[in-house]
Figure: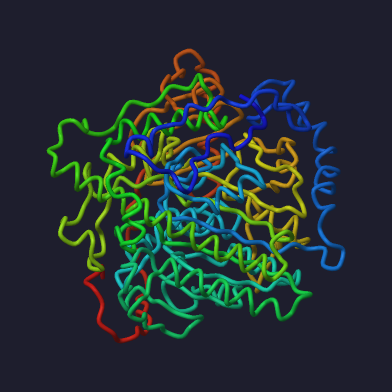
Length: 599
C-alpha cells in the first residue's frame, strides 16, 4: 500500500443524476507517480522481526528532530497552537466523503485535502470507554469506565471493582486538567458521558466552559430534562427551533470568540457531537437531499464505497470485502425498501448537518485568524451501530417527526457504514474500532492530502496535545497519584515517521484484542482467539492462528499481562459480592415538557 495518496475520488457536494449514479463509485483511475513520504513507505508500526525492533530504536533519535521540524511553522509569538478535537457519535468508517462515503461532507473533506488522513486509527468500541480514553490518554479500565457510565440512581455500572465504577476516577487527569497549567483556555461543547453526578462534570475536570449534555444520547430537538442539558452548572431549557448539533456548534463558536479576547492564550476545544447516534432526527431539508438515493440497497452502497476507498488508497486492493451481514435487499417489499431508504436518508442527513456545522466552526476560526495555527482532529467514537435489529428500531410514523428517543437505522445499514469491515459498535473486530481520523494543522504539518497508515489510538490524543502544547503529564494531581500515560505523541507520524510503541489493546464486554505490528489477535466474548495478518488481510477474513501458533501464544500472554495490570476483568462482570454503592442524589433538573425518553 502507498504511504501517500491524494483525495482522488472524493464525491462532490453537488452530485446529481439518478439514485444509482449518485451513490455508485466513479470510474476515475488512481493517480500514479506519487512519491513516498519522508522516512520510507513502512506503514504498519512495530513488527515481530528483530530488524524492525532495531530500526525503531535507531529512529527514536530521529523522532525528536522530526517533531521539531513539525513545530517549526508555529508562530513565535505564541509557540503553542490551539487544539480542537471534533468527535462524531456512532459514525462508521466509510460514511464521510474523504473515506469513500457518498454522504456530502465538504468541510471535513477540505480538512483532509489540506491535511492528513490516518487509515489505521482506533477507538475503544463504544461511547463511554472511548470518551474516557480520549480525555485521559489511558485505557478505559484505568479510569474506572471499563464498561459504561452510570446514568441514574441505580448506579448500574458501579460494580465495586476499580476498573468498573461507572465514572471517571481521580487516578487520571483529563486533557483539560493537563493543559491548563501550560496556559490553555479549556472549552467543551457536546456530550460528556463519563460522570453523571455532581462533582463529576466537565467543570469539575478542568474545563473552563462547558455547554452540552452530561448524559448520553437524547432527543435531538428537545433533550429530556434528565439528560442534564447545562451551561457549566446552570440548567438549560431548549427553545422551539433547538437541535443539538446546531446548538453544540453555536456554543463552541461563542467560547472561541470569548477566548479570542485574550489573544496571547491558546485554547483547547473538545466538540463532542451526538450525531449520528440514534434517535434518527434531522431537519427536513437535509433529509430531502438523500431521499430516494438509497433505494439501490446496501449491497451496491458497500461496493461503491469499497471501490472509492481503493481508489483513494485507504483500502488495499488485495483485501477482500467481508460477507454481507444483512438480509438481501431484493427480499424486501417495495414499502419496506422505501422505509429503509428513509432511515438511511435521515442518518446521512445527520452526518451532513454535522459537517455543515463543522464548516461554521472552521469559518469562525478563519475569521479570527486562528485556523492555520489550530491543530484540528476529526474522528468517530466507535463504528456504525447495529442496535435496533436488522432493519432498525422505532415506528415508521415517527421517523419524520421530532418525537421519539431510540429509532435507529439498523444492522443492515450499519454493515454498509462499516464497509469493508466486520462487526459493529461494541465489538473489537475492525468494524467496531476502526475510525476515520483527519488531522489539519497548516502551521505544523506541511503535507497536504496525504495518508498515514501508522496504527494510532485514542490514547495518543492526550500525548499529542501535551507534546504540541508543551505541557507536562503529572505523576500527582490534586493530591491523587496519577496512572502513567499510555499513549504516545503522534507528531512523528505527521511527518511520516513510525511511532515507538510495542502494542495496542482492547476489551469491552468480553470482546478483546491486541494489535502488535502487522498482527491482530481478536476474540468475541466467550469465543476463541483469532489471529490476522493485517498487512495481507485487514478485513479479517482469513484466521491464521493455526499456521502461526507461536505468535498467537505470545500475544495471548501479552493480553493476559495487560489485562491484569489495568483492572480488566474477564467477560461481563457482575457487581462485586457484598458490594452496594453508596446512593447518590440525582442532580437537579430543569422543568419543561419533552418527548418520552429513558430513565
